[in-house]
Image (tube, rainbow, N blue to C red; front, side):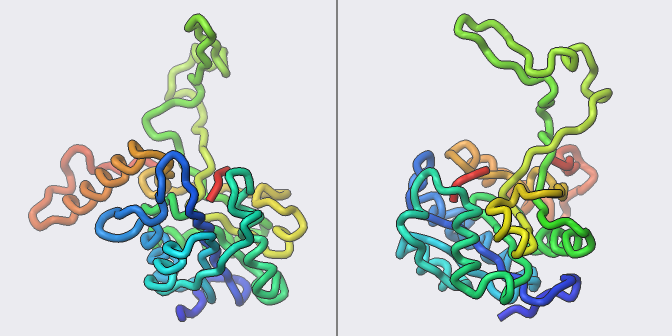
Length: 260
């Protein structure tokens, strides 16, 4: 069992990984092979390798996922079928695990790590725990920039193809003159457990965002996301190959609610 990281301001940090078996857009997503291991394994390695959690628990409705959780050093908790449908928020799953293990009195801090964000690593988890421990916030979500896309220029397409800008005035501005916008990612969410029990959501009062590099925050929902994640991993591997020129193009790293 990994000892809690000394950066935490309270003992007893619990990590919950919601991982159900019924993914629709990418069937069996959580156990699909990814870089030689089940997709879920990458999240477990990040959580366990960070050293900040007293306990890492996978909540699932699926025996194969439970077996993967145990094989990679985590615990598995079989969830109530009522929490395994397409509509239950992941926060309710995390709350169920927390309640089953003694609630806020036993684990003052709880983190939720979704397995469809396999590119965040142990260093990211440690950094997020330090940021949360040093804040007075009750909640913290990992957020990522939109990378090459500019959300200020977002448009809807009408039925006849007409453009309907969401931020009409921003279309007149250069991208470099607009403030950066961020999108929440399910990679690493933190809460004071008592605050989560009261709010029943990680989007509770005073929630703060902690930036995470978009390549580490990538959320895999479909095959194209999985292909992109594979390409990112391959580029990382090439970056560390002997003789690789790290000054070459393509080596810059630009900074960047779901069901589980």
